[in-house]
Length: 335
Image 1 (tube, rainbow, N blue to C red):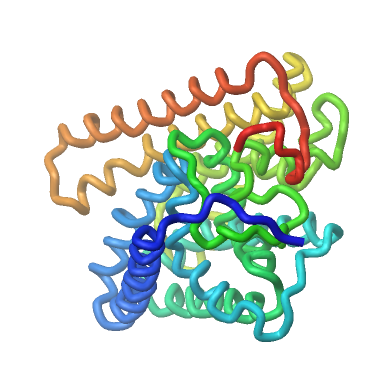
Image 2 (tube, rainbow, N blue to C red):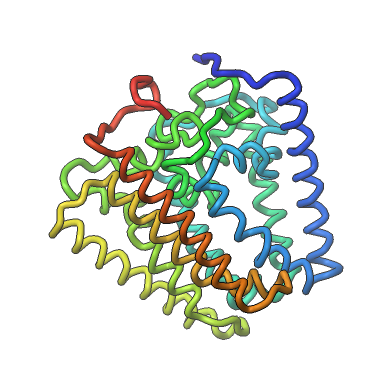
């Protein structure tokens, strides 16, 4: 089963392909830099390139998903060993594994990846190989981009109400490779559909994605209230971040049960809060890496938090007056 979406023009597709190739080459250059120019490459990666992603997800998640180098690799091998859609019963295990990878890899920055390029390069290569292999066995992005990718949970959370919406150029012909919750098919429904297996007020918090979303603000705060250290500090770092994440989850659960906040509203609020927290903490390192003066910290921080606030207000307005829980095939709700 497949159907045609709005196909980009030929010049637009040429431009997309060119940017995808360039982004793949930039990734190769970053890998080389991690081996031979460790310090500067790590600084640029963590304090310049990575901080661009949350804002990109807010503005237009399809932009990053259209040029992501891992997605390019995932589709490079598409069809070599079959074109299977992702089975419905794999949705939750695959998503849970992606969340687990995120919660394991991000704290590891503090004792490993922030200061050591070689292990980071190995992880990137391993994930890239995983994208290639899964692309060979599953249709389009079903095997990696829409399933096991550790960035996908964040893309779904931040991509709920994009300022700019357009079809992912990789998916001009949709084959419904992912039966439910495809971010490319409908950003607004993707995160919500990840929590709809449990019905009833507050029960979405018992789903893996609900746990992730509720814990994520604390996870971010926990990460930024730790410092880099040697490998021996790993248990303490995981404990510290884990306690912050747990506190966040318990706080959100209590508020949801008392105030009876709907899942769609709660997910939007959690996304806005998480982005705001991230940029509040991350901006000083970005400004320092760029060599800008101290006043620039508050200017950039205010602008980025303002972006998150504008996104949040816009998202809450879009949710009124009612919320539905449609499937991918329901075309009555706009993406």
